[in-house]
Image 1 (cartoon, rainbow, N blue to C red):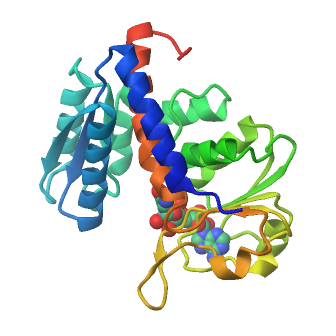
Image 2: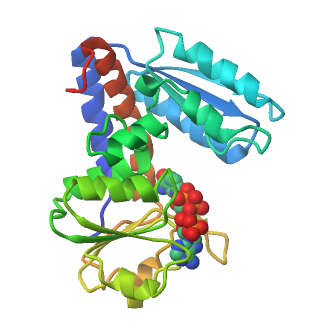
Image 3: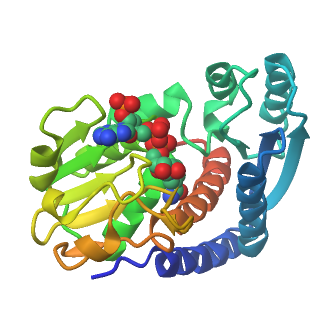
Length: 282
Ligand code: NDP
């Protein structure tokens, strides 16, 4: 079974548009981009377009590549104090001269729609999430849409970054999976991977995952965005070689990627609802 993230994201965006319309709220997202990295600019444009589509207002703050940490912190502080802004997204990676940790820590937790603030991650790991990072949360949505069983299953997450691997493991654990996190120092990586009922690869290495690393019938989630030898977009998983062994698999493109932006929209609406209701029940 191909897990069609594009289709799921379209469905979720349409639903969200209706929900926002019915709520009478006008959520607003602010993006902050530093420098002119073309990939970052493209992602930010896509986020603004998605906002427009679902009825979320958006503003973009652009700072020059040589902006100091203080300048970025000032921009974030202004957005923190702006009552019209519900969500703040600082596009990563930031240029080398900017202290990323200080910037992430400066975002007001109630506006942290990217879910990278230590408060958000702490809540997630304590089992009481408010905002989970968008890529792993989007993966949970795909698993849910396709009714992939998680409870009691063995999940293996390869990669331990703050944006994908770690929060992915926490989300799967919160959903009652038995979770193993692997990384570049893991011994017997293939053995660990082969035990997975749900295998999530977030490594960033083209076609790294072959059929010998996948249990027959496993659900394989490919987070990687890489280029193959021909310069074509591909994931961490050797899709053609693995697809017949896997029970379900996300393609690249059209799998995990589209869900990231859809989830950002959902988190922004959630931030607006939380502001209105003042508690974590939405
Ligand atoms: P990072 O580079 O931050 O993390 C990569 C992780 O993979 C690290 O934990 C690293 O281990 C581990 N790793 C690297 N090589 C190996 C190996 N040979 N064996 C086992 N583990 C290994 O990347 P991200 O988590 O940010 O992103 C991962 C991939 O996902 C990238 O391709 C990125 O482009 C993509 N991505 C896609 C998104 C989407 O929306 N689809 C969103 C975010 C990322 P160690 O910690 O030991 O170094």
